[in-house]
Amino acid sequence: MCRICSNKRMKRLCCLLLCAAILLLFAGCVDDRQGVPNPGESSASSESSSDQSTGEAQSSSAAAAQSTEVPAPETRDVQPALGGVITGAPDDSTKSGFAPLPAVHYTVEDPANSRGLSTAKKDHSHGPASGGKAHYTVESFQDTFDRYGALTLDRTSQEKVLYLTFDCGWEYENLTAKILDTLLEKQVPAAFFCTLDHIRKQPDLIARMIREGHLVGNHSNTHPSFPSISRTQMKEEIEETENYLRTNFGYCAKYFRFPSGEYSESALDLVQSLGYRSVFWSVAYNDWDVTNVQGAETAKKTVLDRLHPGAVILLHAVSSDNAAALGAIIDEARAQGYVFRPLTDYEPPSQTVDHSEMFSGFSTR
Image (tube, helix red, strand yellow):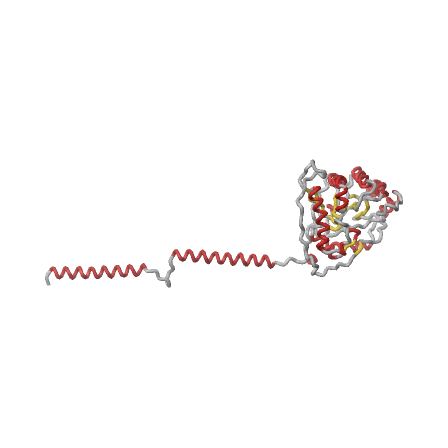
């Protein structure tokens, strides 16, 4: 064979080998979808899967949060915090000394009363205390009231504590100012439960109560019998009075007294749901009739004979007898070892709220 033919065969063989090598290399670069996935596509799919998992987790969390059941008020293990005083920023240019507070708009819990709470009217009345002990019916009342954070008798204080309260629906012969003078002189804190009409007509008196450290409680707007109105109407009665105090006096005290002492189980529940403590009484007498004047000595003896530790005293600011006897009542009660405390000091068995800095301007010796 000649050298030329041999060289041609060798070149042909080399070409064939080179072509085979190229084909093998190209086959190795082809994307096999059923083998290892494309790295770029692998990253995108992982992100999509992660987003989907996160979204499902978030949806599950949201669903869990929405499905969490809140116990009905009568089955709550811990009562909501009730009572206390809210004020705006100090502002000496206003009557009350506080800047206005924003209005509130409460939501009514169970407006249709689907839980079937009793709406039967109950009148808060009881036998008079004697011998330094509350009437046995007061203990029974407090057993019921404890479930709703209400107060008629303080059974927790270790002191011979008294809470002095006044109902104010209207003004008579400037007697409230005389009462405030005595309280200031004796350095005794008191709570004044005022209707909205009284608050509107007596802004200077209300401002004075607030500036001198007294509590201005909520006694409703129109003074209705609460068992006779709907839960929504109850809310409105309280809300309208609170908002007037907030916007005009920069003040809100979360204490409520039922008009005429008329209440129901549903009403107690509604007041509690708004963060208010219902305040009744364990000492009272017929002092609201301005035509039935019996004299300061009679008022003094009646109140002192009915005192007992933990008493909530109800007096009416329209009574000239009360205004005249108040100083002597305070002096004699203190001589018997009693101390006057603000309602903010009351701590029911199921909750302990520190209101020690409120009414700090008072000496309650």
